[in-house]
Length: 248
Image (tube, rainbow, N blue to C red; front, top):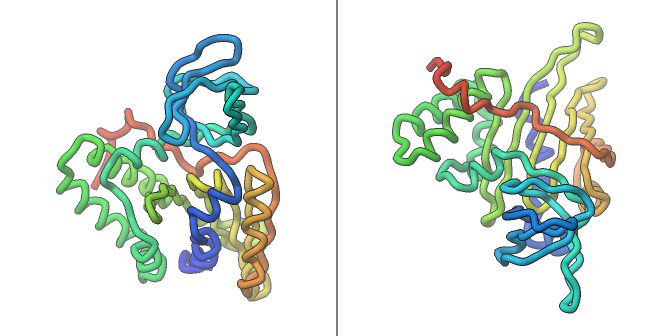
């Protein structure tokens, strides 16, 4: 089991993001202010408007949601899921990788050393506070045995995380995987090797995301199973207060 086997997942997820967003109709909403009576002032698709939510929301946070927009009614937000803070933070910094950068990293002989070297180089050349904090968080994540990689694909933000895990009982290694994608929502999963066969189990939060990904599975030789679950969390959340503890 090695990290290069993540290529199968990244290939599956890198479908046209504009097409994915149009089909899934997922929106990204930032809560600006609570107005009471389950109404909020929000930034939705770069427009500031008043919307109604079926669950309490927190000011300053961003959410994935499905919205109902009618000219004569207050927009209604449903199926809201909180976005990880790092997706917002990396969107404000200049730190990002391309899919080509990711593939180069995955197929390198020592991915951890390659990523660490790149992060330290970017950290030493950081010109803004946001860039410095973002690179520091990437290094903190790596020191906690989790690869965290921000990706920009056609102006859509991704956060990819993965870590290797060894099961002492089965004496087998697995790759845990997490992704936060603007157009698809949160995704988690496990990659395992069983009897020389690569098996990929993914979890998604939206039914439409599941249907969208399953449409492309016929193009893959690996067995991919996709399940729908309610809670999907990052593998690692960097603690800003730990920045002074970084060892390089």
